[in-house]
Image 1: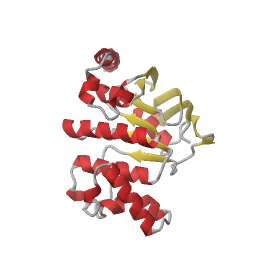
Image 2: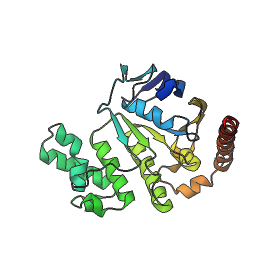
Image 3: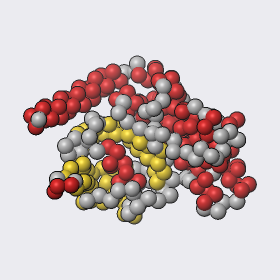
Image 4: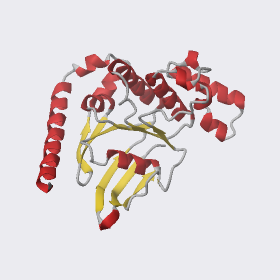
Length: 268
């Protein structure tokens, strides 16, 4: 489970005064179960809009998203979301945050406790299950958010800049954790990021989007995510082809940004 098909998805936002913004135009993409996709592109290319359509938070103005043969028409438990900020319940303990979904489904307490304990051990927080969320650092809160997402056993995990607010050291540790969880769980993962290095490290497949309107510009298959599982990510960054691919994609995105700035100046 976890085969995802994005079929000619377009999204237009209508604005006051009869104006409109075409956020996405004819986006098509197929992902197989267990693929790890990173999505990259300049601001305004529709990355987050696309993720929200996949989550079911937005209905596209054209096209369709199909998961395991069923059209996506709204949010559902088969798709889990991890936000840039953990969006945790601060008045609950770490364990109660993790077992929130299973509790809402009526899972017995003993079973919930075993599940949350196992997931917290997996994300390195076994000793913090009775702590309040506000007592944790930002990186630890994101670990809780990952565990809470996994507790619902989704087929697809959607991640919207989940590591963007972390310091460099914590971010690198979390990148390693994302790779570990991807490999161990076999989940289909889609990760939005603004970092070229992170997109290269965490995407066995990487899509670069272009703006105005948002569309898929390049689709890469990469070896770095597999190399990074259980490895020193700094060594992966020094591995063959990484720097060359980083420079290629940076130049691509800088070119898009220059084009956007040129249009803005021409319109002013």
